[in-house]
Image 1 (cartoon, rainbow, N blue to C red):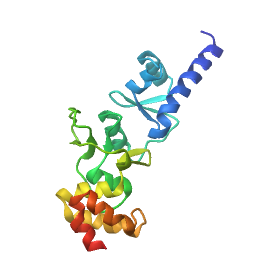
Image 2 (image 1 turned 90 degrees about the horizontal axis):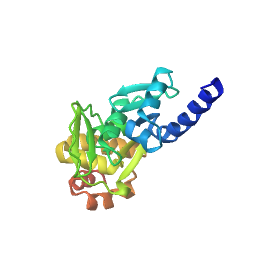
Image 3 (image 1 turned 30 degrees about the horizontal axis):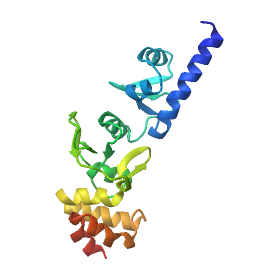
Image 4 (image 1 turned 60 degrees about the vertical axis):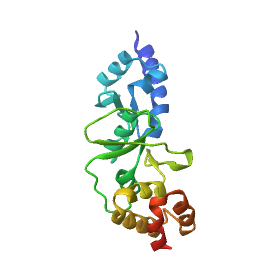
Length: 194
């Protein structure tokens, strides 16, 4: 291979990886790379050349992207699959509301998921399309779903988070009545905030 063909190869492969990594803060899985036609051998070559950084088994980051402040959350969501979202107390951290400092990363995945990973608390439940959002390249449950999930186990933290969300304009008061109907665990907290 001459220099021009090596450059063309790297440019083409990096373009394909960029398309999948850009909306994920520069991170991607080996499986995602394979889906766009990038082999493990090509990934190895790109790591050796300094274009990629190995984050953990099966997850890389394009070197041109800085490490995300939420790297552990992005990595947990990628590990858990394309339908995984950050949720519960981790969702509060992503949105910057409440006082939660969760000892593990919380993700919600479809019922069929059976993976386990140290440091990750897996919740199995369906997340409707209108309950999914993205913040800082992290897939996350929308704020009211996040607060409702927290309300089931820590109503005091949910109250703080709801108040923060209202004060910062992340949630609007007009959304609360409908949210209380949709999420029964949120109803008592919402009635205090209206």
